[in-house]
Image (cartoon, rainbow, N blue to C red; front, top):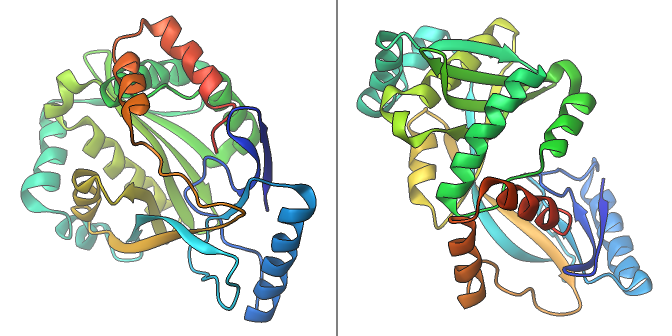
Length: 286
């Protein structure tokens, strides 16, 4: 499945799928995959796409020289089939187990669901997180659309201390997998272990629902801290390669003085302006 992105800023392109970490081609054999890749290569020139990008979890470009590896990430997956006791023992003792126990001692409260009130709490924490990372936040209407589309498979989880939200995550369930998609927190309370508290709650609920896998998503090769955080949950790490077919080499992303200036601005803009920047930016992202 592909989405067409038709942007005056970033160009016309096909992406599978925008804002997703991975999307496996729906083919059963190598021959089918090669047929699809050949069709896409012809479509690139016929439709004058800037590029076509695949985000396969397992597939390789095979014998198609038109598709080359454009970006690489780490992908993290946790096996949920062992018992909760075994899973807990597999967590990093000092950096993960201790944080979960700290959250329990702090008597953090837990809420889960998809109500507008929970979405608002999640989004306020997301603003704080995006400001720290010097990035614009995704539009609030994007999350409302996700809730409307995903229904019961989506859950917003919020941890609070004495009524004050300190951490939140958004997860999706699909077939036998739980997918961690978004996380946010108030950094002033990170020592309370709110994020660890929520992830452990999510694992417990996934086990009760009979899910077999926790998809912890991707991390950049240049952000070893995030990769290490996921490793400490007992997740296995692999390399996720994106494939691109284009008429010209892909420009490097996130470099240069323009990106540095943009990130500095995102760290200083008022909330309403930062939200407006996100509304504009994500129309062209993918």
